[in-house]
Image: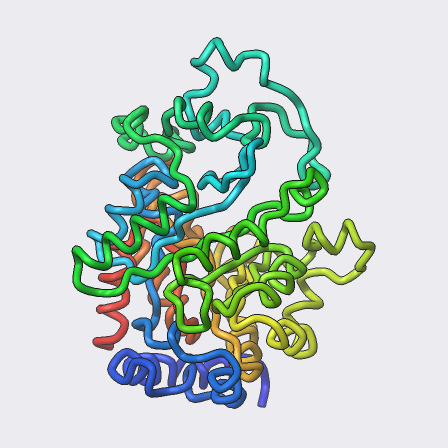
Length: 386
């Protein structure tokens, strides 16, 4: 059977299978494909009870509020997200974990408006890239708490700037307490999906992330295989380290096919992401993780004009290895959508994300990261209705 025919068959059964999974919850293996039952036996089924396709609030509801703030996290839940990506974890100078997309905080906080921190601006090499700004590892937690979050991409989201200065930087410990509080208030389990950011970089600074994450998860009783905390990282070695420290479900994030995870670069491992998405590479990932978080382009590549082409075999291959797939990232604004789903040319205008969601859901993915949880929830309902 040719690849195109196989993909068509996968798409033809995806909606029926996902609908069954949404009804049955934890009762069924991932898409009923080979390998999933063994993965369940080894790692437990807590995360498999989530609705599918799972809607993951990317950095909260970052389409509407400055990312990685409690305003963003709270809104993601209000809009129907099944899981909230709270948060991207980076350390402070005194060893606390805080939630920022990157350790450089010049674009996500008002640090540049604080004259007392002007001398902290510097240039560092972050995963091989010279980066200028202010870095969390140069601040104590008390100092970071004097800053306030701002919108990271104001050109695309000018309305979000209304909320600049409203929220402080949350710590991971505060997130864990917030999760418990929201679970009690809402009468249903709230799930979170934190990420270790640049773990090789921080380990070289004596600020290892995985041990700090594990310590906090143990403190709050959230370090087990059925705990409502999924851990992710772009560095496979970080996930392997976490696999030895906690029982949580683990996900390896995958960037463009021609890139190499930074820990591979640092260790001299020649493999690229293209090697990791082969059946052999996926089997290796499945030996220590329960899922992958590929960029959407690994699921359906784009041509030179930015239009979607044919789906790859990644979904079927990953499912055969017993892995779930949570690709990233769906956003409503034109520049972030495939070309054929854009409307006009305005960089802050919405295109047709519903059309794009449908195409991606047809591949059989288990969930998706989205900046706009409400759009994703509606798109899922449309898809499951057929």
